[in-house]
Length: 193
Image 1: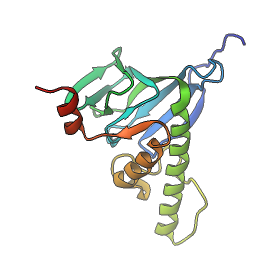
Image 2 (image 1 turned 90 degrees about the horizontal axis):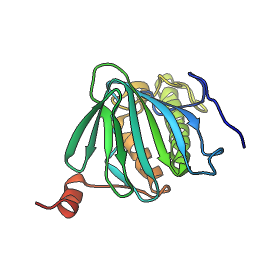
Image 3 (image 1 turned 120 degrees about the horizontal axis):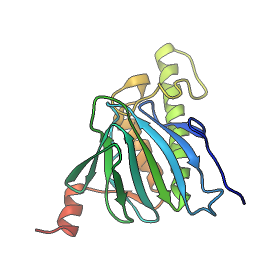
Image 4 (image 1 turned 180 degrees about the vertical axis):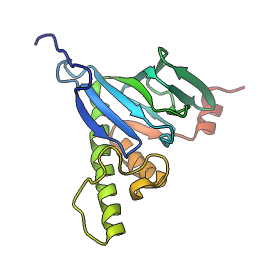
């Protein structure tokens, strides 16, 4: 094993439905599975993931550009460039772009197991975008047609609605020790008073 440099702009890109792109900088292969790091860009109309919690990994964000709104239970915080947000195992969360310009941040997960979720989500969103494009044009399609700009996370761009993305995401989360939570019920149980 040796030192590794991933230069600016490099990494494995995953389109996550059209309103979010993840560029994987460290996939865990050089950290014995202990760490995953990715740069993400989310558009202003990015539809926030369903509030969820992880049972097997910690997750953190370092905001590079723009402003991200994080929600945990019923608590809401805004993080701007230079801010760091950590979500330990078992704490519900979701996030969205709080501004009117794209937001860019580093996502850090330890261990790296959730990268599989993003790989599967990228493939599923590409397939959903391809099927929607085929329906709209009357042709069958076999896969991704939209890349980083097709599909939708927030709205119905490319035929993939927020509801469809949410359903796909929730189904995948179950395979990665992650569960969708009711924020109000979680709040009552874990932060009474």
